[in-house]
Each structure stands twice: as C-alpha cells, then as structure tokens.
Length: 123
Image 1 (cartoon, one colour):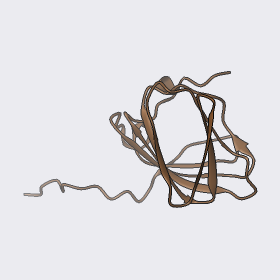
Image 2 (spheres, rainbow, N blue to C red):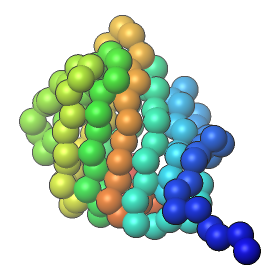
Image 3 (cartoon, rainbow, N blue to C red):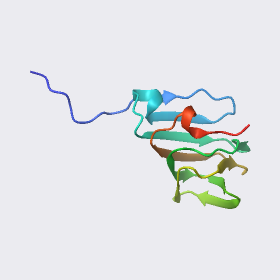
Image 4 (cartoon, helix red, strand yellow):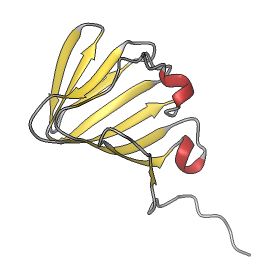
C-alpha cells in the first residue's frame, strides 16, 4: 500500500500575471495549492516599481535576498537591504516600492495567505 509522503517539493510555482514588470512566483498559497492559511512567494521587483497603498488583512514577512526595497508604513519610510527582513502586521497601511536603480529580489510570506480579497489596495 502506498502512503502519502509527509512533505511536498514545489518544482512548479504559480507565476502570477502582472502588468508592472514584477515577477511573482508563488510556491505555496491560494493560487498554487489552494492553501488559504499561508503563502510563500519569490519576487523580483524591477527598478522604479511601486504598488498602490494597501491595508492587508494578513501579516506579511519580507526577506530581502538582493537589492533594496522601500516600505512606506503609515508614513514611516523604511528601506531594507539584502540580508534584512521585516514583519508588517495585518491592518497596517503600507506601500511597497523599489525607487532604486537595481531590481530587488525577495521572499514574501503572508499569514493567512495572500488574497486579492484580503489585500485592500487603494485606487
């Protein structure tokens, strides 16, 4: 009898379609495997990229692999560099951007999982 393995190796992340040049590879989460509890995505934000402000109904953790990323967190400007990480608590108004000259590669983890229904983007 075959038993289910107690692990999953992700070899084919879901590539989220974007129109702003940002690469989003969701490894686990709503789009990839229907998991609404947690999402993990590998992202590359090109130089000059930004998103509208949002007030997500999830905690978001970001770990910078390469480059820099700017966070406008309720008016506080925070810039993270490679090797640094941040947790932004749910229901916090935030804008993510990369106003720098090189792309930014990072990992984002959302609890519960990222969902367009929970992100509450402005505009």
